[in-house]
Length: 251
Image 1 (spheres, rainbow, N blue to C red):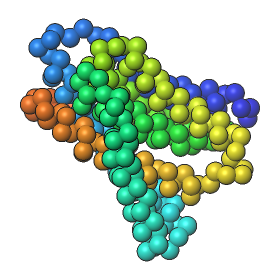
Image 2: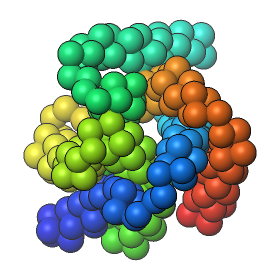
Image 3: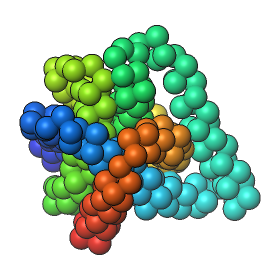
């Protein structure tokens, strides 16, 4: 298998995040904007928690517990997960000076972008390697990734757009997040034999799960509640759960 086709499949899967940013080009009445933001935030936090619980943690834990003894594996996983939690607070402080307009939304968008870049990097490695070994398996994995990359794009673009008023800024940040997957493919192709192991990827996935769950509970949920649109919180969460079930049982 040549490099080009697996890299193309990985890039398409990664850059599908940009499709999620297209929602900001729809025209919304001012009275409906808060409902739309609430729906998107609730949808996004459900996707982040769901992906972490149904994909990242189980997949990584199986490898770690197989590699290490039970107690050591659990302790290592909890330690890495804790670092992921703490990193959100560290990153939060570092980006405070970047706030503009509606700072809370801007912070949520930037944190989502950073978390999802870290998430997309090992995804790119897995997609590329799968496609490199079996093109059909790679296509199946890339479709599953696209299904949750699109709502991930929404979680970045919507907060940044409504915080800054700039569609260009929102699309650019979403695009940067998507670039992490082709970057993962390049890393896999160039450095795989020397540096990348399944155990290393598993630790990265646990770390990312810590970031994503903390981001969803500590940042996205409180911001969604601020708009007092409980109906749309339930609606966004319900749609997120439905998409997760489709991804889980079909792909």
